[in-house]
Image (cartoon, rainbow, N blue to C red; front, top):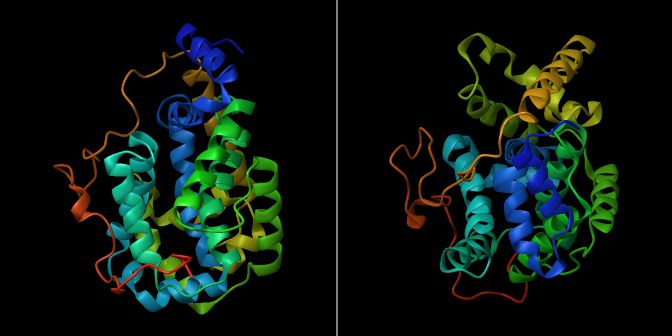
Length: 297
């Protein structure tokens, strides 16, 4: 690859990163080197939960997504980026872990359901970068990302978290093979959430939002479960061409000096002047007097 010298230097750093530096390695990956593609991957991981009937039923019964789709979408992203940017054991990181545990404390679901939800945030972004980013993630980055989510799972008392990326992929694929299916709740959630994606598109493309999401997901069984149109050969070719051009340009530009995300300063229509941690999270959260042995069960 013909890379800008700053990209090449960062790539060398990420290739030789040490295992004990897993949090910094994943932070560099998600906020600098592969930031745009990791964000797209996190975005696509959000939709995948709607294709699992048991998870969709739980999300639908809470009604947060239907009533506040923009807030739920942005807050979900903010929580994960806060954890990445500030660290799992920082003050802000501990606050986000506490929020996750409080929100999920009385949520019904099996151990595998909770494992799957967390692993979508690992596997889906990694696979997107492997297929579409300007470079492949390094072995050190795969190990660091896997360690990050294993550590997050431990702090959420989720048992059985895979410790390697290969094991995470194996669980993810087996779970989806057994559980992806259409449901009225899942399709309703998808319909309610499409408007969030539409709001980020140029006006002429907004009517094509479902087609674009389907093309990015690139999985006929998944799109059928979500009630999306099948991607066409034309749309797939257009996406491939656009990404090839984007990546060619990206490789010749310097690494950005500012991170993709700055805590408290998310630039969105929902929080145009920034946000406090107290603003983040669903409005309708059931209260529980005490944590249970598994916060998510």
